[in-house]
Length: 155
Ligand SMILES: NC(=O)c1ccc[n+]([C@@H]2O[C@H](COP(=O)([O-])OP(=O)(O)OC[C@H]3O[C@@H](n4cnc5c(N)ncnc54)[C@H](O)[C@@H]3O)[C@@H](O)[C@H]2O)c1
Image (cartoon, rainbow, N blue to C red; front, top):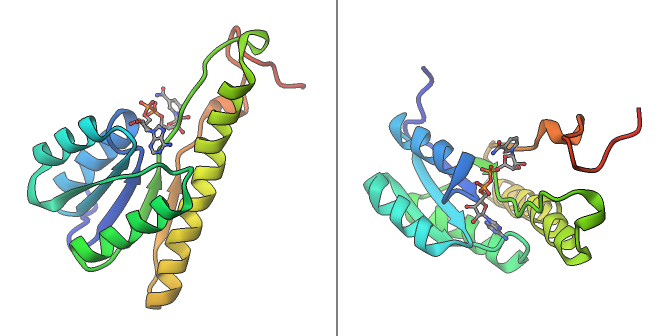
């Protein structure tokens, strides 16, 4: 089992779902985690459960200033940032004809633009510090295979 000892990971959308499990696993493997999420109640609760190797930052990934601040907070809390895991999503799981435009825009703002802004803020951090890092962008098989009742892809 690989160790995260001495490493710090920022998890966007880390307060619940897959991001929460990623955060738990990093701390279980000896690393530090910064949980970034719009849901401050869930984020703060998970943070206190994970203990001293965890920090929480309120983060809206659609807002560039928040993304930069989240990266900086990893630096100030744990002295650096080695990995970024993008899990933030705002899904609108509806059949195509029932999906409102604002729902579509929110999903794109969080899942696509938010991932871009987080990657950019982290890349700038690595270049400033002259260190190496890695990014995991969590996606979905739903991008390749249709689900019943949702938009169909052309084959
Ligand atoms: N759950 C599944 O079965 C499944 C399957 C395949 C892929 N995925 C993918 O995994 C990723 C995570 O999905 P999940 O199921 O854990 O989702 P989730 O809805 O359980 O968790 C998403 C988290 O993102 C946070 N969030 C929402 N908007 C945000 C914003 N603007 N800024 C920051 N945080 C925000 C939410 O508060 C929540 O904590 C997504 O990319 C999803 O497509 C999930």
